[in-house]
Length: 468
Picture 1 (cartoon, rainbow, N blue to C red):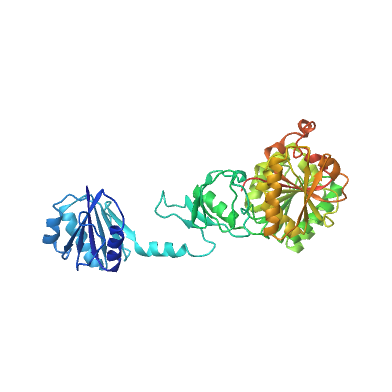
Picture 2: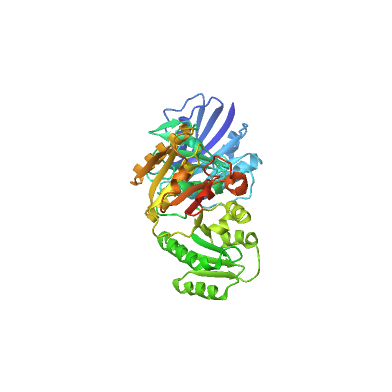
């Protein structure tokens, strides 16, 4: 039997003893010292021994300390009494572990005295009741935020998503609470509104996941970043197309209502540069690097320093193998602009494949289509494997109900890419995965519609990373 000494005086100490009497364990026996005795009807006489005396009295306390305790807990309302009680204990027991309820910001250099700050605990518990603030486990694990619970709001990007398609890198959904019942997660289980998710992972990662779960429409390019970057390499982009490229990027900037940065590298046309500089009058940042450089040398720094959430490039730049790899590695969405009018685009097109990457980026797709006022069209090639596609379609129908946005599912008996080439104007949205970074020559004979994205190079395209 492990002996534990509890020294109590006041309402908190009384409440603590009451909670201890309700906690079953056959391993411990409790010796309770009170200044004034209280009745605890639930206390098991075999496990609780009660004493009534002043613990600041050394002679009385020292007699009790002749027993071998493994721990002492002090919950008293008077700071002076607490300090004198600790001194009395230390005269008899030099190394015994003491847990002290600290209501006065006391300081103690004794390594075996643990001060539990009452104000900090109360403030932390009150913080848990604030809306839109993550609830973090304080007394489990490291207590640094590696265990978190998150309530999924009705308009969340996670609603009606299958757990199996949620990218969980350095974090995991370990439990779901629904209608006050515990549900164990599985790949096919679908998250529903008002589910309470228990998450485990790296604290910094969980903060990002929390923001992603709470995100609603109208935030893009968040959570990837705050600003939009138009990147122009004058060694790659034809000079006679740059003015229109800039004009279309400004139009996108006005729709998303986020700051626009125009970055020009390898400048080689003075008249064009002077024309672009005029956009500074519209509070647009124009950053010209006059040194002859490759994109990758400065690109990653620009993404970080400008807090970029959307990169805009021309079709010529995206066609460049090295540029495309650099764009993929920064894990932010990329808008590739073609020579067609952007303001006339009304439809956003998704070509379903036999994977479920489109489900992973669905919330971002709905966000973009809402802000740009696009209609959503899903093209389903019916001669390919349908099981994965049907689950994606079900997910999009569920989201369309949540976001009050209609979608159209188009069944195609021929290759959708061939059918889309007959369409006047649209924007294609694709998941930005590593298979898009391969050289186009290797993809020519592929049947994967995502690898064949360049077949629709004459149309605008948005590439969205699948990572959260």
